[in-house]
Length: 246
Image (cartoon, rainbow, N blue to C red; front, side, top):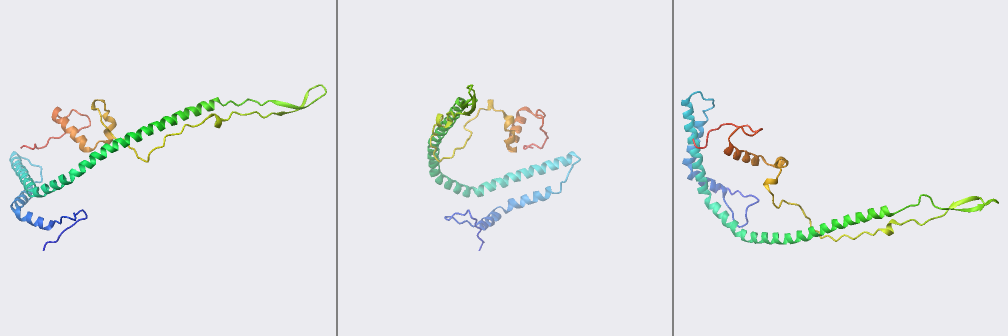
């Protein structure tokens, strides 16, 4: 009896015998696999470089056969895998009906919550700025006398002061003059920034280059090559390869 291979992601509803599937695939596609193996063996003898047009024609024929076999294997894979892909599609659509409704509700309610929280955050920042400005004005309005007045406690017969003491003066109180405006109480909600939209015409692509993937850059370069031809962009190395359609 074939061994059943299960993974942690297996469903509790369905149990699939992967070894049995591989056995069936091997039996049903034995001819395709055998033909592919023959082409692989035939192609392994070519090491290059070639030195004549005759060798070039032979190699072209082999490459054509390889690509034809690749298409045949791909068609068999899609055909044999269709029942599973169709089953996966049914499962995805079935769960998707609920997931889509939950996602739509999530988006709508999250927008309401984020609008409220962002508005309070903006109000809190405005309060902090007003408090900072009021604090600055209060500090600037606090004046300290250069020297406190002095009062004599003894005089000579001629009326000259013998001893004098500094009299205490009332100092302006910064704490009494300044009272902070309370900030609005924030809800316990984390906000994060995201890209809502963009205008290609206004973007400075050079600032985004460190964040572009190799795939995105190569796709853009390939599209530029198709429309403009090679050797037009500095920093790009071009090469000629065998076309897909020989």
